[in-house]
Image 1 (spheres, one colour):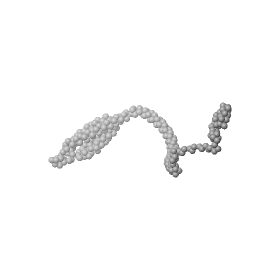
Image 2 (cartoon, one colour):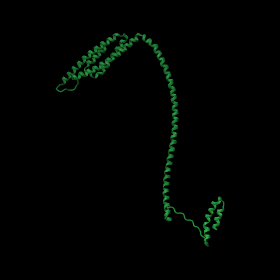
Image 3 (cartoon, one colour):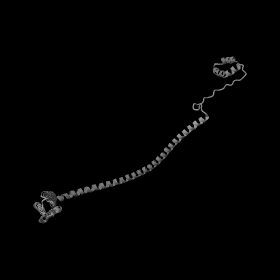
Image 4 (cartoon, helix red, strand yellow):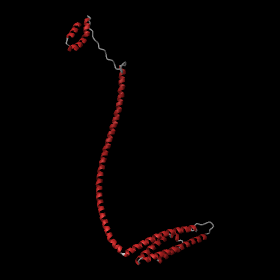
Length: 285
């Protein structure tokens, strides 16, 4: 029978050779069993699949325990990641609320900035108007000054008055310098001749009084000399000006002498003669 199958397969067309070969291979166990003359039927059993290495040689209880521990481990990891994701979600929501508040504040700032720019524009407009008004006022003042300047220069009395005022200011400055010199000289004389009131060893109170009086006398003589010089200078200045301006200059000089007398009143009032000299100079003018 095998020979017949083989003969038929060889006589078949070449296009069906592959299908016949597959069929012959499938029928080979049956043919062999029939040719052996065996009356018992043989059943072909397939080989069982191999178990995974993780559960090989383990009981069902051990496998369930391993699966349970692995499930718990993965559940713990899942809970940890879920907690982290929840924290991230909470932070995202918090940052979202912060961004919303910031957006509202930025909108307010932009509105305030717009109002401020509008006010600045108004202020700039007012400033420009004020600048224009000031420029017109300055031009008008310059025109008036130029018109009046010629008249002022033509007025002889005004020019004399200006020169007298300048001379009076110069005299006041010189008198202030001389006042400083008088102050330094008085301090020098008092320090060199024992003008202080402290008791010195080996001196009686009468000796101290005599020394103080000598210092005051020398100071009075020097002041009298300077006062005469001042009077001569003031007289020369008064004679060079007009009669109307003489009174103002004399008043300025007398005011300056009064200021000098007030500055040194604490030192010069130890002897009443010093103040009388200033009064004499004042009334002689």
